[in-house]
Length: 363
Image (tube, rainbow, N blue to C red; front, top):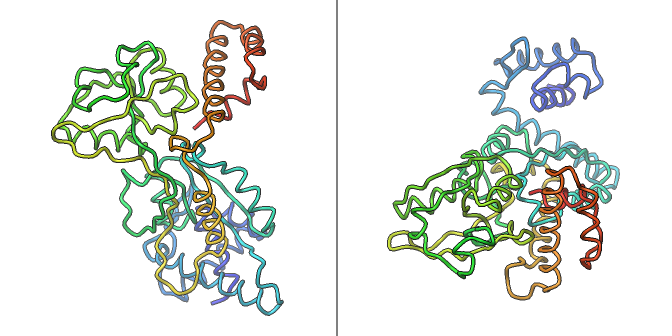
């Protein structure tokens, strides 16, 4: 068994395509196929299930993948020690995330900082649903993921909580309940709801909260992204139960949720860093260890904005920014973006570009 064979196997497993893996490893496809076939012959089992479009790991391949990665990582560590370059990190780091993670931390800035310190690491980033992230972690296709800590089975995964925020009821500013500071879950039985699709973790948490109360709700809109959901709530199509942190920049009222007679405490929405469980003494990926340490340091150094101690100017600016984005959206519907942006130039804000505003508020 040769190290080159292991590298080719890992590339094919991650790319799920022999042609793409061969291109990544700078080898002709026939050479990669021969090397993997020889590895399978040596192990006495098939590592891949092959078809015309792609290749998938067999059960034996899924078992062998983390072991192959550990061997390659151990060899990299040994080479670094011999060359007296113990602090250099190289290899690949595959990160997954849900869109709402950007409401809690500046992930692009962290990735930029990590890349500047460790230029030898090839970074990849994937944004998708929590269930897909969990499965990708278990299959070894991702090294770590930023995702909600609810709604997805965590067997075989290691979890570290980074952020927590309370769940609140979001209503438009002209809603009859908008002036109230709080509301009982039991009072929502006759409300219409705007919801995420069941593929998102927030939807699973809302389902759990209302299920405990024994309450069925009328869902009139089911969407995939927060921007559309929040706009529908602003337009009065329904209410929504959401993490408070997501609402701070927007012109919506957030009512504290209180439990009814049967529900018990309202659980918080939690974001964490999740990895495949590693019971081996050797690290599976040194780069992921370093990046997770950066995430944990960042989470300890930042105060959730809904907590006491947040600078009032930050919250006020977020609210102005949210209003400006909404107004820009309305102006686009009228075909009059330029005049609407100009109307805000005297609002005391920074005169941000509409595209920049959308990028800043997308969650």
